[in-house]
Length: 260
Image 1 (cartoon, helix red, strand yellow):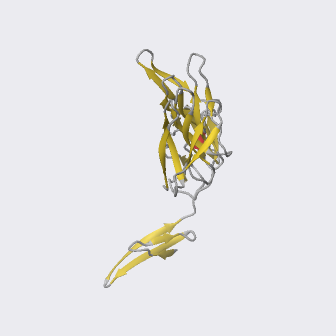
Image 2 (tube, rainbow, N blue to C red; image 1 turned 90 degrees about the vertical axis):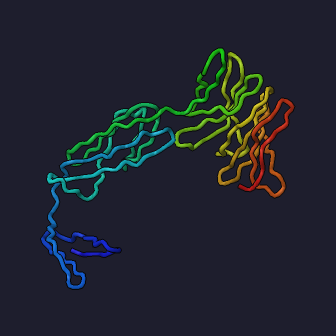
Image 3 (cartoon, one colour; image 1 turned 60 degrees about the vertical axis):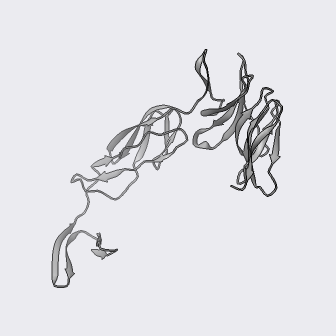
């Protein structure tokens, strides 16, 4: 057995099965303790610690504890994982959890014929809404291939601008929703593929403003016309970033530019 001594605590490292006596001495004071290192038994029990509720876009690495019949903690080995609720949650060979949809899933860990299960809840994704005194709150849903949405601006004519996101936030895009009974949601294009974008303002003509960030780049204020064509509004002199926050029916845009 080896002893390391970081600070005031002795750390014991078991090298092989057997008995050892550890003696601590300070001046004329000494004390001893007998320690037995034994060969661990086979896996008799798998413990799966509590997994918190997961939100869309959040991954979580599961942990596990292996014990023998005497409840001695064993060196880590990776169990195999299966899942009941594949439409809600995915689990990798290493135990990494990735939410897929709202609901409850059960994960089962198996090793040497021993089994443990745990239930995991995936919370509902954000959904954009519109509210009026006549209709109350209405869920605006999400575009195809996206899982969450947020409404951030509305025009006098009822057009709505905001964002839509995929799981994990791999793609966050500016969107606009047309007004009227045949309303539809359109994901707004960006100048550079893979850019993140958000919309913060829209006017009655359907012109949208916000920002876009190319991969590895800085935020730039953007304007999307009613046809979806996009224009980079640039920055103030000396600024490296800008964000457009609002637009009126005259086409005037407000926002900020700086070096955040």
